[in-house]
Amino acid sequence: MLAIENLRVVYHDVISVLNGISLGVQEGEILIIIGANGAGKTTLLRAISGMIDFYNGDIIEGDIKMGESSIKGLDCTDIMKRYGVTYVMEDRPVFWYLTIEENLKAASFSRWDKQVKADMEEVFEYFPVLQPLRHKKAGYASGGEQQMLAIGMALMTKPKILLLDEPSLGLAPLITEELFQIVKRLNASGITIVLVEQNAHAALNIGTRGYVVETGRIVLDGKAQELLENEDVREFYLGSGEKERKSYKDAKRYKRRKRWL
Image (tube, rainbow, N blue to C red; front, side, top):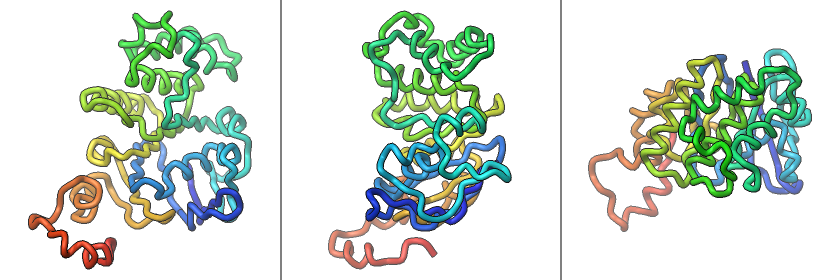
């Protein structure tokens, strides 16, 4: 459905962030992308969605394809309208001074059909906590409610692929669990999900496949369950792994160890 081919991205003409990433997204799956801060995960979503230009970034090599069509270099609005790719950024991009209902209406600006009202009610079915708050300004909503609203706004664009960037960031564990269950429901409704997430355990538990990104490269990939059971993934991203606790004196030797075989 979506193919990333040998993608290289730089910021400000000098800062190399993606260094030849290649990956594929299959229709109907939940694809998980994990990695440390600064690995290039958010940059990858910006490149796919056509928003890399807003951050002074450039794709200097490679291609991004939806089916047989290249979308590299297209405007983000064109990518959303023509190919159904919608990006939910990590900083909960909602209009704080508008009500929750007004935010949902604003998100449907690109549509000309008469199903906007029905789709809005469907958003409230996915996120029932927003229903009694629909006339409340988004700026007064909690972090979890704003995250749900941001995803709801994305749903108003009728996406085929939903790019989610750190949706659990700053949320309580119970809210995170509820949010991920909703992501599973959205996927079951036919939306393909690409999920970038620091909470690797929770993400891989709902995912189909996954990729591990380090320093702008793919270092490991496989089925989500295989990654959950991988010793290196458990050690570096799930907070568990080798049974013996490492001592501080072994830190330098340990850091030099080749992580991914």
